[in-house]
Image (cartoon, rainbow, N blue to C red; front, side, top):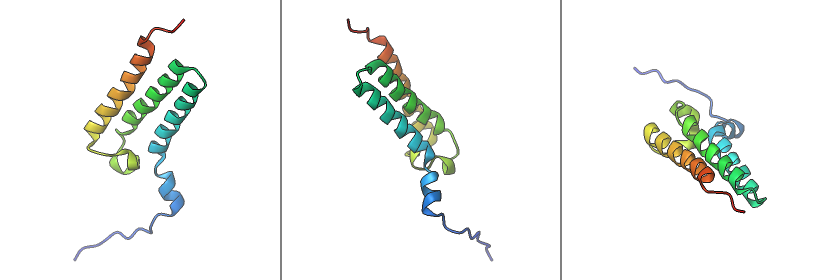
Length: 99
């Protein structure tokens, strides 16, 4: 005979709050885009890269904690997010400033 754990279903608020890793990355990207639109492309691009890099670090959390941030396996997600995030930061600072 098997014993099943019966947990009450999560409320909508608990489900939404459980997506904080993805929400933090998307918020960082949105803030970065707003900064770019204000005319500060280097700072905005750095913010976007930092948010994506944060996503790569957050993807290292356990599977049940990352929510919708998990797409594939942990290693691939982390490598891609860290690579893209660091690449954006490097590219933003490598381009010489306009006169």
